[in-house]
Length: 194
Figure 1 (tube, rainbow, N blue to C red):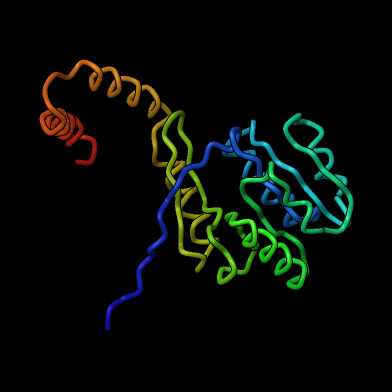
Figure 2 (figure 1 turned 120 degrees about the vertical axis):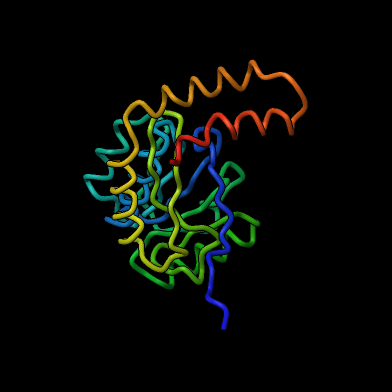
């Protein structure tokens, strides 16, 4: 019997160039907003919720790219400006309505804590300057992803960004065809993992 594997395709989105709708103004909505802002402080986000917590409002007030509206979700909340949808309410029925409305507009949707309804997951990330590492357990254990993120944050040196700048400088000076450049870069970086 073959062991199941994670077939997710990792993608890094430019959240400052897309608009994300979060439906849900409570703890889960705030958790999703914090994850987005951790990865891109300039993320463009619209929050819709029957209630919006004071802490979420305070977080939104610090960022001009975040809008919030206190109202129940309706399909018209997914207007032509929305690119990605996150359903983060405490109601499976509302989350399902959000998902169906997003799918009707052919948008990618994440339904918090409901992997079978998600097109994508918000994985854990490690950022050291220009290096970003995404971690996914395919929805099996966000806690493990969090712990592994903490391990990588400790293991990666603080000067990782300087290394990337130097490698980029070297790459830009290489001559030859693509295969030759790859070979030279592989040779140069092989000592990084020994």
